[in-house]
Amino acid sequence: MLGISSGLMYSDHVEWTCGLIRRYESDFTENDQGWIKTAVTEGTIEFTANETAPGSTAGWLKCKYDTTQTSSSGIVLAWFSGPGFGIVAGDYFTISYDIYFLDDGGKWQGSDPVSSRVQHFGLTSTTAVNLDTITSVGPSTITSTGNQTTYLAIDVQVGSDLPQEGAVFYIKDIVAELHRPCP
Image (cartoon, rainbow, N blue to C red):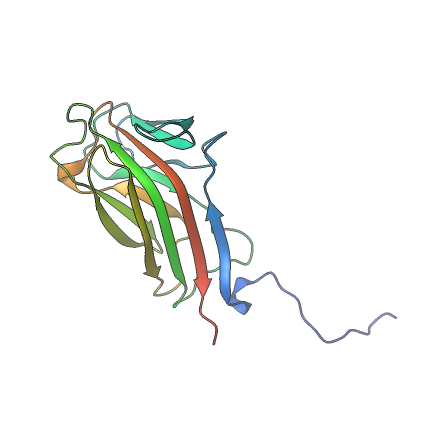
């Protein structure tokens, strides 16, 4: 019948849910999955999928800088966007990943370790990563303080660690989750 409803209202607004809201797991065996360079002011980063980091197996995303960097730079994925999506204070994000910075004759300015930074909600978590070593980072947790950005960035921001021309890092097994506490 027209005009009669159950009184229930439906919405795609995430604000009405709690618990695990979104989950991302990388699979770089075929492509870069939409990751792009971020804050690369000189040159670019070349992405190659399904590479093998030294001493490991295939499935890594290889990221190679073609120009020496003078400020923070890295990779970014806009994965928490869409109609009705908003991040609110108290939401928390967890991330873990494997990363390998190839030394290759001093391509990372300074000496080990390199500071690998994760940015989400405009907030950061930094981990020291030794060169020429597969390092498992995380899980790290970042908690939102309000309506903030919906991108995930992994970069190098410390001036003494900036990549030089030809610098390479590999990344794999990124697992990121956004949670909303239940009342």
